[in-house]
Each structure stands twice: as structure tokens, then as C-alpha cells.
Image (cartoon, rainbow, N blue to C red; front, side):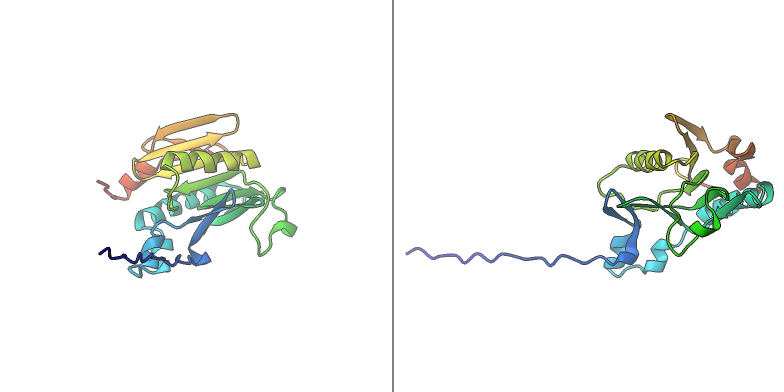
Length: 205
């Protein structure tokens, strides 16, 4: 006698991801903060994954100090705290530091929305996005190229691991530098992350 086996199909409910965990929108696809799964699993809070590390914080502070003391405040706006930029429909990106010419980012363009004009320079300290479908290199290249195509004059990546600087400018010019050498931030002003950390007696493995 044959016994029929009842097939039970499992229907897993799709987890709804809160919009607060979205770091950027690229080509219409949400890119979430690194560690967002920990929030969904309730092992971390949103604040924990959104906050920068001590190392990231001190590097950002170092770069901002140069900008605030060296650049002409009558000429530039200097934004931080993950400034967003609206490139086009379905493309909203974020950056740690954005330097804008006041002639381009005029008072009427400063609203409750993301700026929709290109910055002179964007600075990124490490990758804060969860990369499900891209490699880190692929993400850096894609995001950087979108910013350059939008009209940004220079994109700088400061990567604590592997202690390197990437400087990209229009025309396909990309420089990969050790972060222990002097590099130009903008307008001839230099920065040297490795030397600064050494002077602060911050030792990294």
C-alpha cells in the first residue's frame, strides 16, 4: 500500500528593512549600512552601526582641521556628517566631507534636501556600505565615477585597511598612494594621514 506524503512548503516571510538603514541609493537600488543585518537580528542598534570608529573620527577631524584653517571661508562651504548628494533620479550618494564652491552651491540651493550640485571635492574615510553584490574595489570605482561624471573635481578615499589613499580626478586619472606620504587635499594644501597618526602616537596593527 502506497502512502502519500504530504509536501509542506515553507514560506519565509520577507523581512522588511527599515529605510533608516539605507546608506545610499545607487541606480535605484538601496545600499544599506555595513552591519545592518546585526540590527535586523537585534544584536546591535542602528546607532552602533551608523557611528564611525575612533580611528575614522580622528582622521575626519584631521582633514577638517586642515580645511577650516587653510581654505577661504568666504569662498567655500565645508560640509561633514555624511553629506548627501542628489545626482539624479534613483541616485543619492553620501560622503564624509564635501567641499563646495559658494558660487555653485548658492544660498537658494541650501535646503532640507540633499544638494543637487557637484562639490569641488568629496572625501570618504573607509567604506560604510554593506556590499552584497559588489566588491570593495567595484563599489569604489562605481561610486567615484558617478561623482566625477556629475561634475565633482576630485574624489579622495582614505582607507585604513590597507592604509592607502585613492585620489580620482576627471579624465580617468586615478592615483593609489601610501597614506604615509604627502598628498594634495585641494588648492595646494597637503595632508599626510600616516604621519599625523604617528605624531598622535596612534599605533595600528
